[in-house]
Image (cartoon, rainbow, N blue to C red; front, side, top):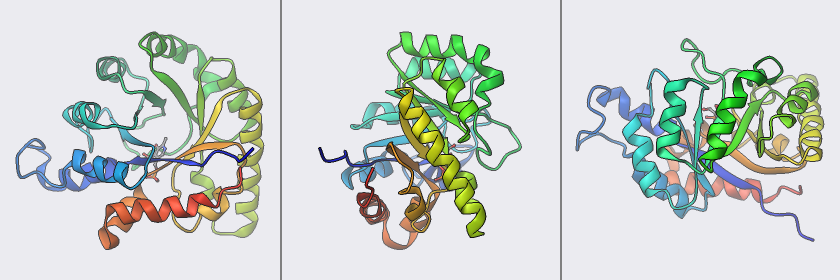
Length: 252
Ligand code: PXP
């Protein structure tokens, strides 16, 4: 049987970042560009399987209205990335994205810096996971690629894990790359054996995608910054298509 094609979720937070550079106090102004919903539609037209938006507590890029509008307009699926805080969980339950990916969130970080520590946070996560499940939302946990974290995720009844590829993406020395790749390969196998869907994301670009293709059992990649950055030069649809072409080479 042919392995299924690797799916792409495009994280469009960076489109909002660009808009907020000018319109932070009036993101809903008619002139506020670039428009998130138009960007989402272009990603879908180019073949993305879903859109990812991170609603952060400080609302530094995505605003509540953005996720509402995405909910109204996204035709594929919406993956809301978020921290486990009561306020944001309430937004998720109101918006009802198809999927939620729970991530750690520190106000001072530039972007998500590491996976959720499921080993120590498991008990805190349980009620949130239960509430999301009751609302019919599939849940993913963003985890560092260690057996400990994957095993802990496996006890929480979540549908998916998203393996944090940031360390692989940032490793320039080949030796470190091969250690990180090995960690991801082992973690992916373990997650798959625990019957969780295996996704991966963070820092994936048009170069290191070649390494990411070496991780087995993957269903979906969630990619943002590199695609939006490339879009400045070649346009968003072509940037998405170019990434999809690189993903087509995945052997499973
Ligand atoms: N997946 C998760 C869980 C993330 O936190 C991020 C960053 O918001 C991404 C994927 C996308 O990362 P990047 O923008 O580096 O491609």
